[in-house]
Each structure stands twice: as C-alpha cells, then as structure tokens.
Length: 464
Image (cartoon, rainbow, N blue to C red; front, side, top):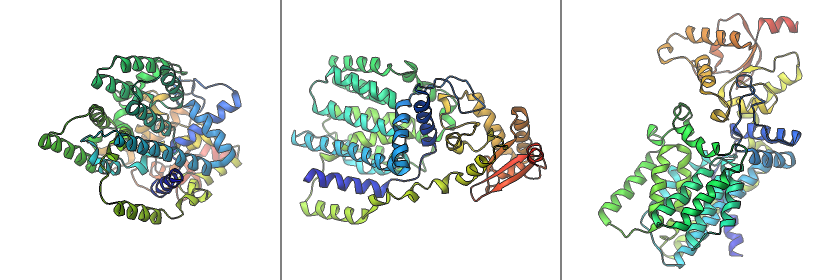
C-alpha cells in the first residue's frame, strides 16, 4: 500500500510540474513511426525534406518513433502525455528506492546535499517533454541502480539493456560514460569488461558505430554552437545561475570540510563536469544525484508528513488534466489551421519555406520541409547555414532589413520554393512576415495569430 501511495504522489508531482506542450521534435518522431508502420522498414535516407532529400539518415530513434506512433494511434497526444508521466514517475521512484536501500547500508556521500538546487537548476519542466530522451532517463536510472546495489553486473542484462537503449535514443552514450567512469573510479576490471560489452551492444542499431561517434561529431561541429539544447551551459549563465551556484557550493564544501569520499561521489563529480558540455546533460546529473540526496533526509517525521501533505494539495487533480485534449495545446503552438487550409487545396505547393521549429510538425502533416529538428542526423551543415542566411538578418542589418529580404527571395528562387509559412508577428526575428514586406511577388492567402501563409504570383495565377 505504501508503494501505491508513493507512486501516486510522484505522479501528482510530475503532473503539476512538467509541461503538457508537445515538443516540436515529437512530430517528426511520430512521422518516422508512421512511415515504419506503413512500409515495414526503417528509413535510412531522408524522405521528408526538399533540402536534404535522399541524404543518409542516422535514425537512432526508430524504435521510439514506432512505439510513440502506436500509442498515438490508440490514445492520441493525451496517451503520450500519460506515458511520459508514467516513465518519469517510474524513473524517479526507482532512484528514490535506490537511495532508501543505500541508506540501510549505512553509506554516505558529500555531493548529495545540494541536489535540491540541482534539480531546480536543471529546468526539468523544459527538458522532460514527450521525446525519445525519456528512454535515456529511465535506462540511465536503471543502470545507476544496478551499479550501486549489485556487486557484479550480469553480462546478459547489460547486453539487453544497451541493445534496446541504442535503438530508442542516442543518449545510450551517456550510459557508456557512466560505466566507464565507474570502472575508472573503482579500478574494476569487471566494469571495464561490461563497458566493452555495452559498446558492442550499442552498435547493434541501424547506424552501427556511428551512433557512438555522433556526440563527438555534434560537439565538434557548428551544430553544437547554434542548437541551444546542445550548447555549453556556461554560454547562458543567466539561465543556469543556480546550477553554477550548486557546483560552487560543492567545491567550497569539499575544500573546507574535506569529507570522506565515496566511489560513487567521484562518478557523480565526473558527470557534473560532463553536464557543463550541454544543456541536455544537466538533467542526467540531477537524476544520478537523487539517490545520494536521499541519504541526507534528516529531521522530525512531522516535517516530512507536512511537506508531503502540502505537495498533495498543491498537485490537486492535475493528473486528471492529462486526459484533457486541450492540454496538448497543439492548436495554440503549431499551425493546425494553416495546415488544414493547405491540405484542402491540392493546387497549393507542398514544398514550403518555414521557421525551423515548425519543420517537424509540417512534415508530420505531409509537407516537404526546408529543415527540422533531426538536424545533424540528416542535414549537412551547409543546409542549415543556407537556411539561416535566408531566415535571419545579420546583426549589422537590424536597422535595414532590405538585404535580408533580398536573400530570402533569392533563396526561394534558387530552390524553386513558391510557398512560405512565416510567423505573423515579430520584426527581424527568424522567418517572420517581415521577409516579404513590400515584396509584390508574394501574396498572403492565410493569416492567423501564429503564422501567415504566402505564395508567389505564379501560384496565385495558377489558382485563378
């Protein structure tokens, strides 16, 4: 009974804290799963874009896409949100139970007391959306539990875990890092062998060893500079100030108190440093620190009972809202009506210019896109660079947007683009309506609060 109460409590907490807005990347994941279901094969070249048509697709999330589409087909976006809450609840519940078991063993560590700061600084409500990354959270938590509670890892369990993980999400490399850090800090030949076995198992995916090289390619390429979620945390100290404060407190405590180190603390420190390399890595460290934090829960029982009661009141009936279709917010955050209009008129072009963040949704709706969230998995850097040149003004052009408008028009002429979906508001922002301002070649055919659809005179005359 206590497990059921604890599970429901975690569910309520997650439902209250984390967003219900679909991730832009969810849509291309669903489109991938739909294509796999229709064709019975995993796509290895890009079928969705016009800028990278036929380019190799390093499809490391094919299994997550197929599973997501099966859930969507049965239960819609609401079902995906419920599964997300279930996975996050199971992940945190497993880590909390790991901390409880460690406490009974009498272990303690010095890094854990600042976990509360770390969890908030991780900005979990922005990172815990419906994406294949949820598989990495769960698998990493399971591996961390095994490392702390088992004396030896079973080779069959490691092989199965990494084979499944490698076909769900490319974050399998974080699991190999965790095994490698544990092997080095504990000087364990067994863990080193398990790391090698995990690497072999992770190569059992459509992309082979490329999947393991992908993070290195990302960090060493311009993609790592322009994609915010992979940018190093120190580039945005305004967003992650509390995270740097937490790290500073740990270092100060280590210098002043000189506590006795545990082997798992050294692994956490390695992941703390690793988390600085990209925003997406911060939640991984926050989750790994959770069991160590549980070791330091002290105080009178009434304090914890009061805190839990307050949490239940605060969460209220939030889990029930997950079943409300309006919580998906698809129509508010994505061009639902504009896509319906284009779909109802087959004479309008399916090949579009559009904002980067809408690419995944547009390809899900059956349009040919310029670029989408698959990024380095599909698109050469030149494609994105060319898109940026057409969609954004340079810093020196903020006062005069005429050169940017000219580049956009030339880009569309060069690539045979006759239709564009642009953000309705925002002067000088990415892919805004300002790109066709005072340009008589482009005419609007739909205008909404989010986007405006414009087509060329050639398309207008064809429709007439």
